[in-house]
Image (cartoon, rainbow, N blue to C red; front, side, top):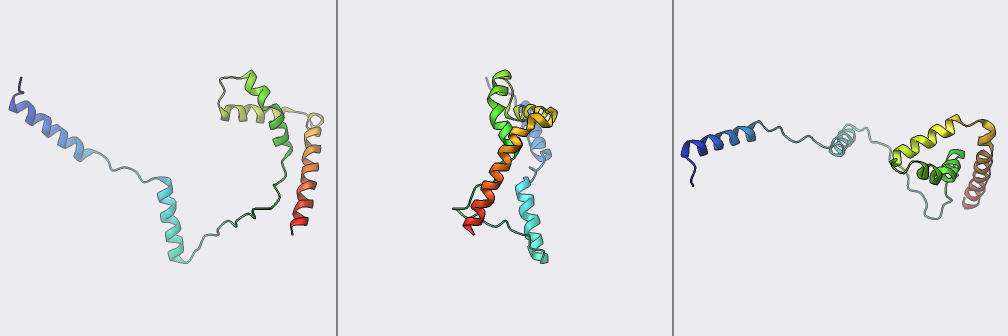
Amino acid sequence: MPRPAATTAAAAKASSRKKAAAPEPKATKAAGRKKEAAAAVAEGKVTKKRSKKEAGGPKRARSAYMYFSQATRQEVKKDNPDASFGDIGRLLGEMWKNMSEKDKSPYKELADKDKNRYESEKAAAA
């Protein structure tokens, strides 16, 4: 059954008002950073670029916390199956923060050994 012309006209008028009142989409963060970088180049304030890592260079040394995290992550996941990645990280951070220095010492020893390994590989590569 066809609609009355008055209803169709009212609907069209309401639709055009919505389109006119619709806000413009916001610029993304990446677009904003690109504009800032372009402005800095134009003003002569060139930003410092990160240097490329050599392909054959040694891997960085792990921290004591990273050794702890690697050793206990599966246990924390098992105890908290519904926890997200961020929640697990938060739980691990709390555990690390509340550990005594005595409990942290095995992980600190591993980190020291890894730091020595990294320094020797770095010296050998140079």
